[in-house]
Length: 80
Image (cartoon, rainbow, N blue to C red; front, side, top):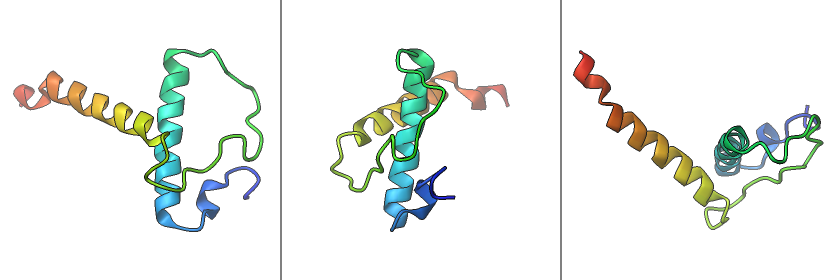
C-alpha cells in the first residue's frame, strides 16, 4: 500500500533506487546516533529522492564508500 511504503510507487526506477539508498544511510545514522527515533514514521515523513543532484545522496555515497573501504580493509580473501 502506498500509504505504508511510497517508494515502490515512485514514477521511475532512479527515484526508487535513490530513495532506498537514502533510507539505508538514514537508518545507519540512527543506528550510530539515535537522537530522532520515532515509533511512527507517518506517510511521506521522509520525502523521495528524485534527482542525482539532491544533497541527501552524499550521505548515501558516504555510507557505501565507508562500507566498501571497511570490507576491503578486512581482507576477506586472505582467509581463503
